[in-house]
Length: 254
Image 1: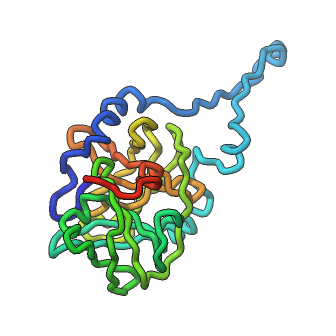
Image 2: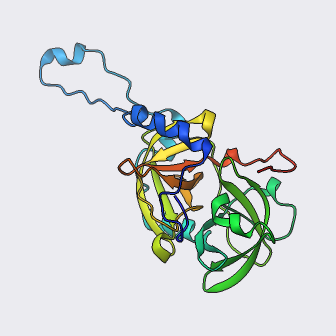
């Protein structure tokens, strides 16, 4: 995914290329729930397959849309904003509960490296949130995984929780700013997960300007930052898992 000026089909970062090769073989994965029926007296003698989800998944119901979808959308969009770098570059950013990456007062905001790449000289970007125009400061970045962390001192927005858990078949919500339409949403499922590359692929549809937006599960946790779409495939969006951020790296390098 790219920002509004470059179009959605920018070359995918190195960390993404392996993931695309796995999307085609992993897209069919997921939970297959079986159902037994009793149509004869002997049916009760047949073994009953265990189709229950693990306890943690059963409680959070990650494989189906939440009942209060409107509430989830309100929660996620309240933490999502439009980010502009220069005159034309536009993308999306999200406030995350990542205190270890902060240290300065204000909100810890995450987006894509390619969204802020042209502003790294002075490290200053513009934030549009709730009708307010704010300034953000790029604090660190990971060019290889196409991620960047900002501090927005005057931003008062709730931070979304993050999760390192993602499984094929899980329901997801993507939020972004395609073609300038802030807080646009789309839904889908996780198609594949490549832990080695910290990559999640999904069929949730996104558009130019949605780079840096959150990919959220049914529990309202951010499982990835939407990064790119594969131009030669149909409805494959790539997101970088949040743990790919250089949390333990003192200085990120290009």
